[in-house]
Amino acid sequence: MSVARNRKESGTAERMLDIAERLVQIRGFSNFSYADIATELGITKASLHYHYPGKAELGLALITRYAERFNQALDEIDRDLPDARSRLEAYVDLYAGVLRNERMCMCGILAAEYQTLPDAMRASVIRFFDENQTWLAKLLEDGRADGTLNYVGHAEDVAQGILSTLEGAMLVARPYGDLRRFDAAAKPLLASLTA
Amino acid sequence: MSVARNRKESGTAERMLDIAERLVQIRGFSNFSYADIATELGITKASLHYHYPGKAELGLALITRYAERFNQALDEIDRDLPDARSRLEAYVDLYAGVLRNERMCMCGILAAEYQTLPDAMRASVIRFFDENQTWLAKLLEDGRADGTLNYVGHAEDVAQGILSTLEGAMLVARPYGDLRRFDAAAKPLLASLTA
DNA sequence: GACAGCTTACCTACTAGAAGGTAGGTTGCC
DNA sequence: GGCAACCTACCTTCTAGTAGGTAAGCTGTC
Image (tube, rainbow over all chains, first blue to last red; front, side, top):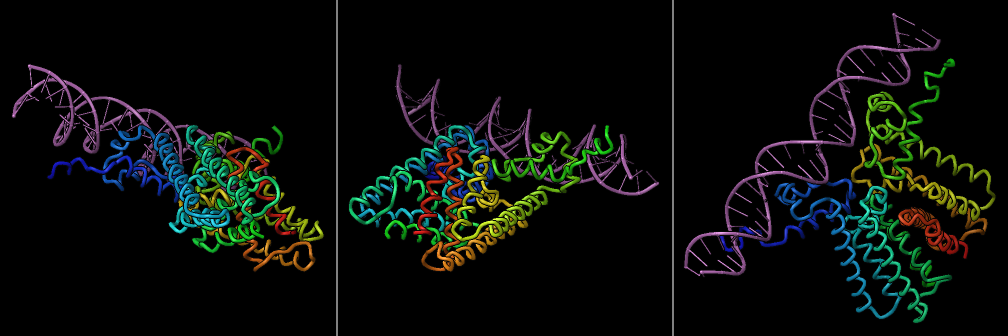
């Protein structure tokens, strides 16, 4: 028993989020329980309430972390890729990556459950979509400027369309367990923005 | 007390489906209960089990009826509208109509819950999508023939893309309670198929 | 440097309520 | 009297959540 061994050094709260995140993305928020997490972590349900007093708080932390990481990924795309077109491809690949892990976009699945979500979570789901859309709208305007993308109408509207298409592509592809279904929606989308 | 008054003349089983259908499309399959239906119908939970022995059977009946009606609507579109382009518009409007009722496509929401669905229901969700896709693929080929639609690649792939886009548009539009969000995805889709 | 008091992270044992579901009885029309 | 459609009265299992306790590690004071 070394000094910090019994203390289980690594954040249980963080591991709770890891497990819950996976369960949400596979089953949905109302289809996993504290008991599921407890079993997987090897501690009791009661201990979980020490870290997050209720499921609503856990859910909120879940979206917050997810959105943070997503925004980080967007920043990296902005930093690493030169033109709007290749950034858009990278954005699409973010979604494809989630699907490759046999998961659904967290906020996509939460959108489906929206009516049964705690209030605090609802606002965060909306915010996630808004932030995505803002990022996409800027990308679209950049693309028009640098000549790598073109489209008709307002960037905000097109951004809404892109987001919807990608979420839908994930939603429908997952029951089939077939990534090509995602591509079937994503490729024509990209094509229509470069034509 | 007229002849068939106490007998509640109109099929309770059918009214169960009506209520359950609405609840599924708003909350999802795992977020409504027999108790919800019982309350709304004004009879006891136990009576519901007389009509559908379990939730899985109810769920199956739900998809079956929904798919039947949807297919009828597709037949009517085929019968009433002359060209592929206007048929596609009518198809998109079927989706918009669901959203106008503040509902999500039943099979869209079931797709989100897919991993927690009874086996029999899973197969039916897939079948619904397959039938839609088959209908759309034929429509796309007709459109190529009659010159009202054009696209690149296989009709089946484009059909997948259309389905995904519309499901996604509904999914994202609903938390916002904003039909324009649906249009933002649907209009460019239609445009890209007529360009 | 010891010991008091506090904090962290867990535990056992429990609650109330909701879930799906069942057994068996009642009602009223044909 | 038979049967459809309901009922009362349960049961089990699962749910989130609570009460209260404990072992171990920190921290500040004398």
